[in-house]
Image (cartoon, rainbow, N blue to C red):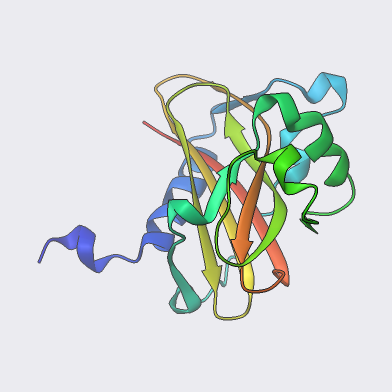
Length: 168
């Protein structure tokens, strides 16, 4: 068995999240912060005493969809004061056309990169929490921005964590 198979995936993400902080060099450029749309305002880091045993593996990609850039303004307006919003049947086709999945649809905050090297992992916990981990691979400062994701879950998350990290 390979060592990567024995390390819980959320633990790997936590190391990636906190690694840039330990380097004490700028890892991200919050490109819309000057316009009042700071991505960092959406950040909600997991507590330092997180029990990783309660976190499940990544949600299957079929259970979530990024809101296209053309619909970001509407999504951001819905997420103005909260990290998660239940969506009605008529909101779904406007935010993520042609996408359907099992469960109840929720719009959630995320932080992503404007580059093509970024990605997301979504995790749920046994306590009903949701963690949206955005990340990028780069040797230089990465431009970040607010993103919105529609995720289909069994019930509304009791808490949403939003992180973004850069790995070299």
